[in-house]
Image (cartoon, rainbow, N blue to C red; front, side, top):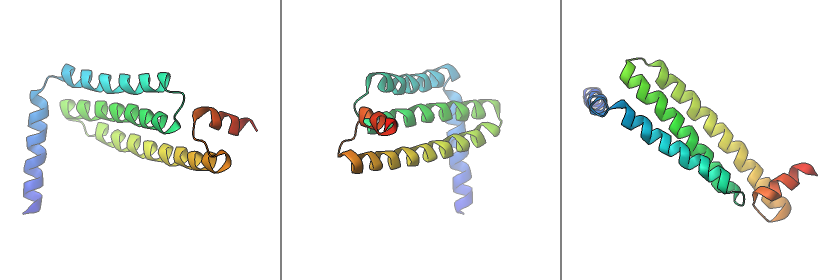
Length: 120
């Protein structure tokens, strides 16, 4: 019974997404990517916000894979989306471990403290 409901929900989602033109969905993804890029360029103080902006960029890339997968009836985009999410999770784990290490050594969390940490 649950499988029938999930299949109906997935088919409703695909029909709903297909009613929206592809250019609008790509513009949404481009706006998310631009916000992440601007956050990386303008933010040089807080390393945590820098990680969040990179995650936002990864999310917009995976949305592109999903949108093209739905519109082209090809599931390889969804598989690539899983790969992007996996690599983003690994990147976040490494970044947070660097963040904890820098905080333990210097009691400060900033981009400049991480650069000085690697130059020692």
